[in-house]
Image 1 (cartoon, helix red, strand yellow):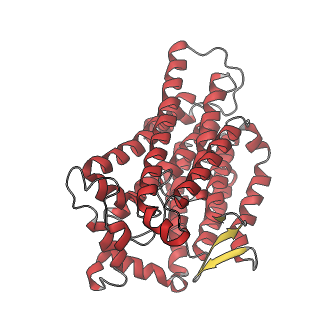
Image 2 (cartoon, rainbow, N blue to C red; image 1 turned 60 degrees about the horizontal axis):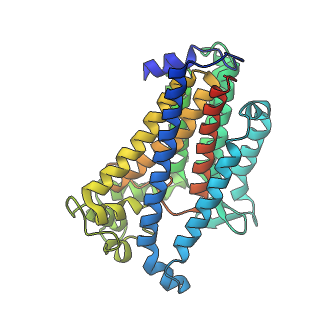
Length: 391
């Protein structure tokens, strides 16, 4: 990681007209971006397969059509691909030029769930914005805004160790978003957004002590408002001792673990029973458990390898782009897909408390698939700008 940190930060930001690329470098860049795209679409195909498998029964019950939810996801995949193509053509310098507007949009969006008539609550959670055809979690927008903002700040300031001009603006914005998303009763998402931001700060050259300070202050906020987040206690209990309440707090957790008992090849695609009887909304947060039951060790390892590959080749691409701004964008947007995916997997196999987050590119959900495709579009645009000699 230190190599990545040094490789990315040694290049001056927004260096123009570097001339023709070396042929070897061009081939490397082309290979890395091709692998990122191929791996991403492989995950989408796997996702569609198991969304169909896990929604067949529920689609009949709810809509009278076994393919209803699958077709809806297929529609969102189409919309996502279209937006990926759009964002792959948007000059990344525009994000820097309008970063204040983008930040303002992020702040407004983070507060909209609390506005009556606009926000949509489920229980005590105020996480969603009602767009009519789609309810989108405000955190889906915030995570992208924060990646762009941090990347711009790091690229504009030459001295990454300057506390007031570099660290303080990032610190204030990151902690603000963490606090607002936490108050939406979505602490898990707040932590994942913070984690992705810390990764970008690290590869952008921010001193480790400042990164630790950002994390500690954010964590302290959770303790301060912990009495307003009672569901956190239930999730921790479910993680530490699910058998203390096997039909209550620990039910979902135990059901996920039961999925990992079907050997090397599983019970076969479409033949799983846990998804229908024991896993509520198996096509969202718990889709990895469905994959585990139906394809066994082979299927689960394939998904894990693909997610690791996506992050690895994104990192390699960022290193070879060798520009603070665009490298940070690549790492940041790769993080909100791969790191979040690995966290979801760790939850499903019992190594982390339940987070309520989905598996990017795989789980059912319009907002999830759209933001993931937008992230891929921006990553591809960073590659194109390197090829064109803009970097």
